[in-house]
Length: 97
Image 1: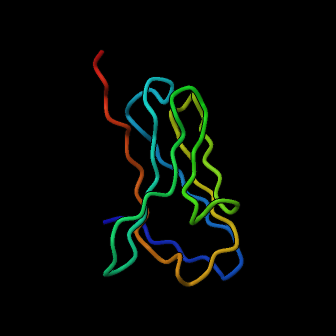
Image 2 (image 1 turned 90 degrees about the horizontal axis):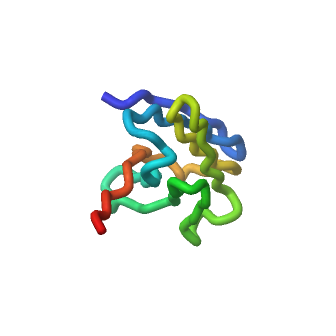
């Protein structure tokens, strides 16, 4: 089962995703699913290093990566009760040209 993490209100959430692919070859997305609610896309860090974030978390979210270790990090500041959720990282789909 996923690891459980408790964050105090107004504190920041920091979680990391160790992936089995090269983060310079694929984008990595973060999403979350609050209990009983739909999956919500949060943001992505593309293989080139650029980022895009959902409007709902813009200004509070940061996605970074360690290319040498293939780790992708999510940081969400000013945590509030409605941020309680299961958080997922996911590889971007492969496009064949």
